[in-house]
Length: 102
Image (cartoon, rainbow, N blue to C red):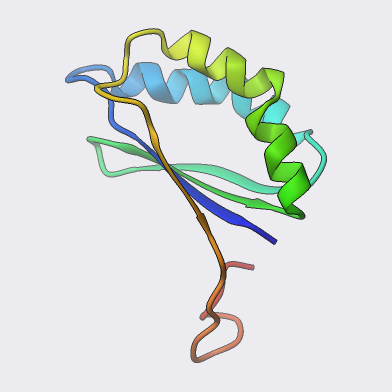
């Protein structure tokens, strides 16, 4: 079950534009096959999406899908640079509940 962390760095004053685009697209992504988690987080400067997909094939379909294309269209020129994406393997540590993304 792939976990994805994607970081979007908006231009100064454009964080809300990035979040607004996610607000439009997130309901569509939530309906995609295999989407178990697709959640935005921010520190006020960047937007971090944390995602979990049932299979790599589901993630691959998401990456090539229309919702992601629409997200990029909605962002327009809001980002400083292309977003960074990490596809991660879980390494459970310590408490079984607290040591992994459920």
